[in-house]
Image (cartoon, rainbow, N blue to C red):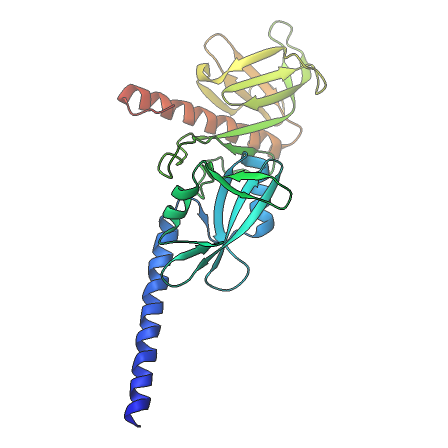
Length: 275
């Protein structure tokens, strides 16, 4: 092997090593970002931002293209725009701009106009959508939302509010005085469980404050299948669902709500709670 060939191989090896180290640094930086969604597809990103995000919510994901290409997905009103972010080996290329880190990119565009799209929509980076969202362990009939806090730098933009599970559907409830059973439309939002005469009613019959609820559990005292109860200081509410699956879903999300309420109460008592 000649000297020239050996030197060529040495330089090639060093280049490969630098490339390897560069990719390791990139992976470490990406994993440290709370809003990098590694395996999220374009369609999944759109569904996530449109259903749970708000105007200006954004996330970074792996592009379907080459290895060093990423996509910044941003919600702009009622649509989601996607922008390529390319890692060049030493910086991130975004349009005509280059940044040494992704945090530099976000800090540069935080609460400033990002781009005027082809439709003229002004796009602003406001709310990073976290990859880890605290939520119940059921999904089919639970819509999970994430409340965000906006700020002027990337640090300020980190979300600190808990996710909010919501659920709605028909349940049959036992009356308080006359112990008959009537089917009502129930909605769960934040810490309130409301029930209406039916789905078309605009005014609730009653709103139950879950901060006053001490327990939610299956009940076998009422001779009803798929029955569960909510225990309040002055009354226990007995409800039953059409199926065991529906009853289980209601119990799970209501118990999750109670756990969140208790956790926040403990944080307030210890002085660590941030609303």
